[in-house]
Length: 300
Image (cartoon, rainbow, N blue to C red; front, side):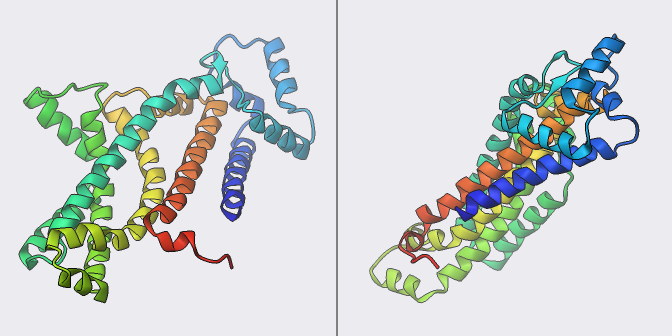
């Protein structure tokens, strides 16, 4: 219940910030909603004022906006001439596919490297630590351009536009570096615990001890980080989609910003916040799967 209340608070905050941003932006609100849409007649302008309640007090407008959002009504894009929910619904699946493919690649890389390098030779650990630091430091868009140059324009092994593999790799590099460092540190701490000595005394090999005993205790910090990285990666996907000319929320958001299509911009903000809240809730539930002690812990 606490988690649901916190999630509702995050969504309410996102809705409130979007509403405040709309009303603090320079110019009249009705002009921001219409944006650069051609052919908007005075009659349409008056209808927009009526639909959004722009002739009513600000507090009444805010309550009305909340009611529309709760009903799933994110407004109408006068640039695209379609409802905002439909525009986002068409673009969201491609962005989610890119985001979760990148997170999946990052998790696989982190698990493999952490298991193979924890408490190993210093030179091996140092080599991978350096690579992880470089991966975290490299700007995502620059690495995407590098991948395009090598694999699309030089080797012709991947499409330059619209593909999934190269954008996912570009997006996965930074999360992979962070997850690997956290997992390795957690695994090394777990391998120093007394229960690991007990497991080894039972005849378990080193690899089995790492996977069956050490890794489970090292996963909780990585799971926490993954929930935060999903939101970060979802935001970075907007940039990567532009680099690789891939359809998704990136193309939609860029067009909305350049066209001053504020209903679409606000809708994208709210949907990204919703995805982040759902991902964080799922991550919290995974704690009980990874650590059985949390399932039997008495409520405080």
